[in-house]
Every structure is written in C-alpha cells, then in structure tokens.
Length: 332
Image (cartoon, rainbow, N blue to C red; front, side):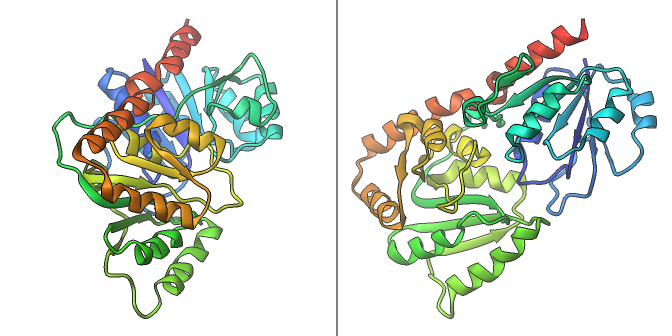
C-alpha cells in the first residue's frame, strides 16, 4: 500500500497524532509520502524512510509516488482543493480535527471525490451528523516503549500548543501547590490567537515566578516522550468557555500511566474514564492535586494501571484499524 498524506504544517511537534499515523504505517511496511502546505513553526525531526515536500506542486509527486490512497488531514480545505485532489482518481479520505463544523461535514460528504470522513468519537452527536461516508475514530498516539521509567509522583505536566489553552492555570496552581513540581511544555504556533499566550503568561508570572514551575518551549518529540514517561500527573487545561474534542496530549498521558485531570466536559471525561478525574474550576483542580500527596504506593500503582488500560484504545495499532480496513476495501 502507498499512502499520500496531505496536511497543513508537517512535521509540527504539537500535531503528534499525524506523526503517530506515519510511524504506524511505516511499521506495517506502508509506503508514505507527506505533502505539507506550509513550513511547521515548531518542526520535529524528519524520517529518512518518509518522503516529505512543502508547498511544491503535487502533480510531479503523485506521478512519481503513485499513491493508492490520498489521506487529507483537517477540514480547512475549500471545495477547489477537493476538486483538485479528485483529478487523481484515487480514493480520498479525510481526518477531521477541531476545525470542523456541521456545514463542513455536509459539504465534504457531498463531494464525490471524498470516500470516507473520520471524526472524533462524539462528533456525530455533537454536530447532529450522520452519513454513510462518516465514521468516528479515536485519536492515535505512538505506543510508548515497554522499558519502565520511574514515575515522579509530584511532577505535574501540561503539554500544549501556543494557541490559548488556559496555560496560565499552571502558573496559578504552581503558586497554590508548592509541594508539587510543574512543567509546562509549549509548542510555537503561527495562529493569530497564539499571540495572546506569551503576554498572558508573562503577566501571570509577574516579577516573582513560582520556583516550582518550569516552562519549556518547542521540546523535541524525544524529550516530550520522556516528560510523559516521568510525570506522575497530567493536567489538561482549556479555557472554560471552549469545548475540547479529543486532545492528543490526554491520550499520550494515559498511555504513559499518568493520573490525568481534565476540565469537567463530557468528551474529556469520556477520554479518561475511571483513570482520572475532572475539575470544574481552579479550586477543585488544586484540591485534587494536593489530595495526591496522601496517596499510598499501592494507590499510585492502581491509578497508573487504570490510565494505561484507558489509553489502550488510543494506541495507533488499535486506533487506526478502521481506516486501514477502509483503505484496503477502497483499493479493491
């Protein structure tokens, strides 16, 4: 099988779900070429066994690579892009991210070039959308190495893009929970909204930043994997008025056995299931973080095991089974 992935800013480090897809396909022996519209603002390393092109004409790539399937990430693309890709007469599948709407779903489903659309679990209900081309599929992450890494139970991690994600909550909680160590990893973004994040963090930090908080920018995928492996707690933050769909960082935290705290939103609570807990506001988040200080070693082991069990469905070797089956069918 030969798959051409068309996306926006590969290999952006904050979009590790695309890299997980690429890694799993290569592990299966699938030939992969990634075409990106623009340069990634915070790029990760490129694989020697994956072709990559940025912003160049697609015709020569398709002629040379000869894909069996074209797989499109995001629904940012207008109808003229779908028309253009349809010229190649290859099965075209689309992976929905947080950029979609009911109108976009209907438009993509109606386009003759699009054969399958993959949303997040709950998207059908959320957008009141159903179609024979539409299916729901969990986010995919790379299964972590089996080698055991000692957990730092008092390490609270948050990994986020520079887009507004209530990153300042980590600053406020670090002040309220001096017994814990906080690490905030941020990947640079070129989105217009991202311009708000650095000033907001600077204001929250003030003249006396909490000594138990470390902010790291553009951490490499290798180092990011080490943070997830070591962290005992993962705290997902999102602005109270924003609805999150299926954040990849939550999946990465679960597969690495982190006790995971999320905002009290139905889809986020469904992700962590019994493995974590939800908070309604800063006070509840602080209380739940401080409560972990009294946990026994047995309680930590149980929480870690529950997290790994909940994370199984996000590992690429399971999460991508539906799309692989569809590609095989579409090719025939």
